[in-house]
Length: 501
Ligand code: SAH
Image 1 (cartoon, protein in one colour):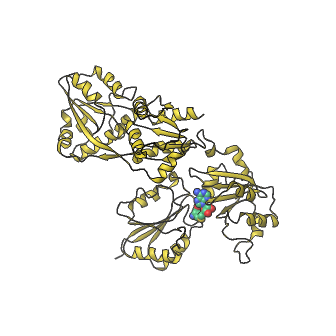
Image 2 (tube, rainbow, N blue to C red):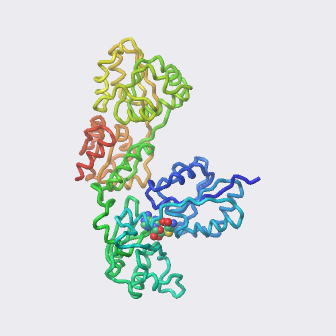
Image 3 (spheres, rainbow, N blue to C red):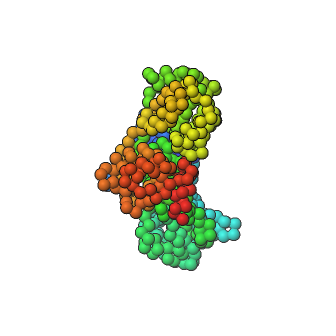
């Protein structure tokens, strides 16, 4: 009987994690083993199984790279051992990715394999720079060309004369080092020196940069700008179109470095919005959310949730974890049928909505004081009220409700613990133009992690989600330069953009 061993040759796209295909993500999450290269998007392996074998098989500076032969053998060996293997490559596996060679080796060994195409850098990097590789008026064909070979070499596999005559866009991969001789060769063979050209460095990634010019001067400009690999070179009339339709390098936050200090698990939404606006995001998570085990007091409180007439949720984390706890106790959303649900903040209400229930009370301002006020019309005297939240939190809400005669219980669903700062995050923070704080705990734990004489630059502007977070920042000696008017992620981004523009 055939085993379950199989190899998926998967393209991971050009670098922007959003360009990983749904199929690629699904296979990454399922694989027993993942063999990956250098140019895969940041975070591409985050969803891999914790027990999956992750193996880097790309080049390492100083170290001899694993040979293609060795990689082929490893793929065959893993598939024979009944493993489901993902061979993850940047861009598309069959475009200058040696995917063809790996497929041949698997076919020769009689092993099953599948190919998942990816978004190739030669299309995506130009697209993110405002360059369509074809255009009805100016480019009816496109050629993908490797620039890896020095055209001066006798044994070049490329026909540069033919490429010079090629009636359309030339897209050169791996060509930065050889750009001077490639452009000279093309011109010598008759391609016009005045033809527009552009080089896109780190296409689709936060540090994307484009250098424009003509075939005649692009090599010099690239050298002057210090462009490094990975970069794509585009030669053709379309390269000039970026002057009108470039979009990514022109957002309101272009050139700004913005630090995101929220927990890694929650950071992606904020980071994504900032990137879309052109910012370079520094991920410096200061906190981590650790759910408490649903046992003891917490388990008995949650199991008896039907007895509460009012349930208050103070954070999106709390809302999500309450449902997890309900499930752990054998309940579901129906257990909340009889209760009034109150939520602080639109993010918390949205988390509830995602679980199929809508909050009855959401105060306009996202602070506990506002919820206390909003609850004034809800009868609580002599009734059981549950406040589901972090273990360490302000007691304002439970105290106010107790004063009104309610029997208040607190379900401490999670702890907020410090996340150790990586050297990379520390270095990024030191160069940030903006540092964003989405809660008091992000402020205090970040400063704790940075240590005395914290490493935030004098010139960095501090952005806070609301008054409570701002107060904590001030207590720690920070000046708050920007405070969101709406105390959610959208409000924070809006305030940051209006400060930056
Ligand atoms: N299989 C990949 C290409 C691998 S060859 C694909 O389909 O995209 C490696 C070359 O791809 C680099 O030298 C560079 O020319 C290009 N490249 C890969 N990622 C890139 C990026 N984010 N920006 C610009 N060029 C990139």
